[in-house]
Length: 583
Image (cartoon, rainbow, N blue to C red; front, side, top):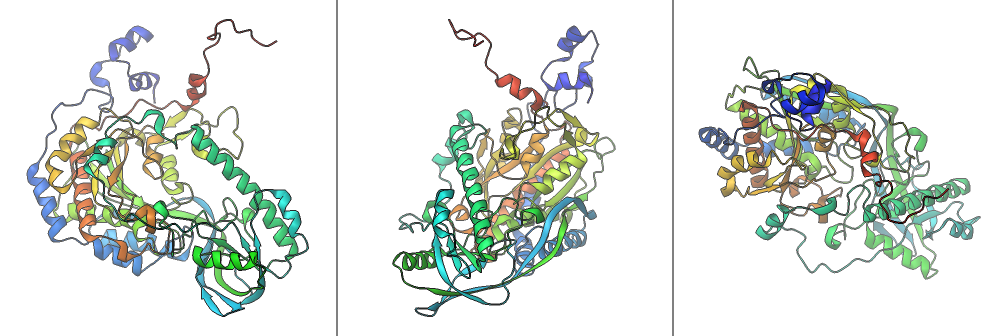
């Protein structure tokens, strides 16, 4: 990007730039995404009606969902099932008429792994089956192994001393029991009008998860302490010859994590457990909380309990790569066909369920949205491209890799951050963009379960709100009413937003996503809601069509300058009256 273009992107007009630099810059040379936008959108209501008819009367979204969730199943990145999903989406997108369907390698992920079978049972004092699943990247046991259980519930490394010499040949319950609260409210809910209205208000400070917020810093400190504690405990258990480790399943939202196994990064016993150098060498599984609590209470009552554990798992390589599935509907306008509108969702999942709502739903909705447009034989002005990501669950690896390869990279900062600082909080160097960066119009993402679309987050892109408001006005009868200027985190649109590209996540009804299905064994095809997914696909198709047909590109936020962030937040020198600088 030229210096002049960067200054324009920061909000300086052509005349101001000329006076600042002495370089004449014609106003009509300002990129359309930084220039003025039309006050009134050209909306084709006939196309709205055609998209609605195709999406509601001839939907294939549940056919896609059945084939993905039931036909393929869980899709851990690097696993054989993930490879099947990549191939299936590539071939299916070709079948429904998209062009150039292919896989793109975003780099090395780590160990390929697949759960074959896991079972646990209490042998004595009474025989009983227990519900558990292998934690991701757990090694296999050497056939069924039997041992007495030991309950290790510690909050400090010094407490490990009490277990030295006592763990050989044991099966360890590792982690505290937790309450199983009564559920007094439904675990399934849709947004109320009042809640949607509240989303339209300004969220000061970015909320409790904003980088640098006290709440986030406390959580990160607790996580760092837990990681260190687990590392020390694993070393002791490995040295002593523990047969297997069982951990308690975490809770779901609103106390919904009862009778459920959440088997995700909360079950990992090591950070980046998929990497060979971080591999956990002891077979380990996560157990339903009610069964875990029973075993732990019997231990605390000094009842000898013997458990048999069998974990069958297969590693398929130490250096597996991750792939995204990409396909497109080529643009047809001579001036606009090289500009691109994108839609996507992440194809990978965790392992305890079949990844139906997280994020099979977002993937099949994106597939259905482009199918609708192809079925209507639409010839878009701009190219419409679908991308289905992998590696999202471990850190947005697929979308971040795609953005790095196609749109822009950050220089290494002058001062390196400690490894304990999460990647999203680390200082970045200056952004260097590519030619493709100039042609990406917008990216739309869906990744909050099976609920219907209620609106869209603009990621603090204030210029785009008036556009979206006009687009959704004819969709009010479908429940699409809300434009929120807030940031929303945790998924792949952030990879685009980070490099200054318009990336948006839709607002969806919550349903039972956070309470029951998110990363759990309940995340199955049965939790998908057909009418909601049909509605979401119709909305996505309309957004894609509208974006592809606009004369101007979608407005962007100012060009990002993360290398200036630290200085911008630094205290103003000498601001405090009567202060004496230390010598």
